[in-house]
Image 1 (cartoon, rainbow, N blue to C red):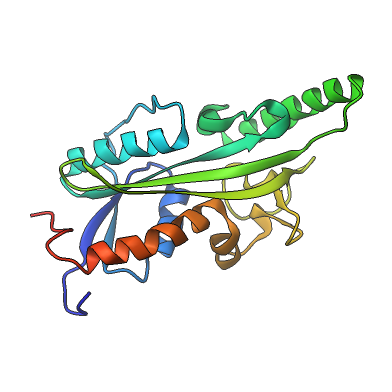
Image 2: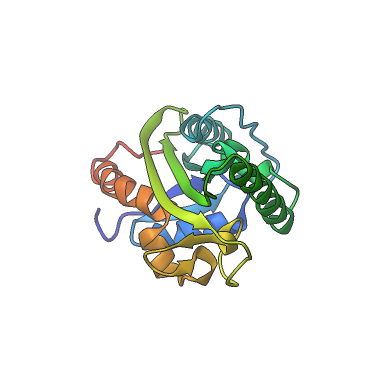
Length: 215
């Protein structure tokens, strides 16, 4: 895109300040003006998958704002909990601390049942991030998904990040998400991996006017 071209407004379809900061950092090299979604807007996430919820949010925010919108639906899936909390990750409890406490409690109970049945404990899990970009008419133009495998710690570690980051451990690095600096988390995390898939396709759209014109 030309250096002098006016940055395109892109609304991040989220009310989560931490998530918006992450996307602003990931999108910093693109000619975009990052905006948060309208404060009064509430989108009901009725999808049965991360991808479906991302599409729902991107479409709703694009239509409400009249701008291009980028939506992310992401969450934690724990093997021993049959994929829970999954699409309910953000609604598992009313705060990050309570969500983590519930997760650790239910995982401990699940592993007790596994041991009683003669099975080994299983703390494996993965994060998924589904991204969708909608144009101002609400049409979905781009979709990708990124994954990050890991294990659930018995106790939180680290002060950075948000959500389940303090208990999600990446064995290859020996760090929880909450112990990683922003650059490391962006490179190995589910959202960073999804963005790595999205970014070249988004650049293609930006380089092909008037494809991203909101006029």
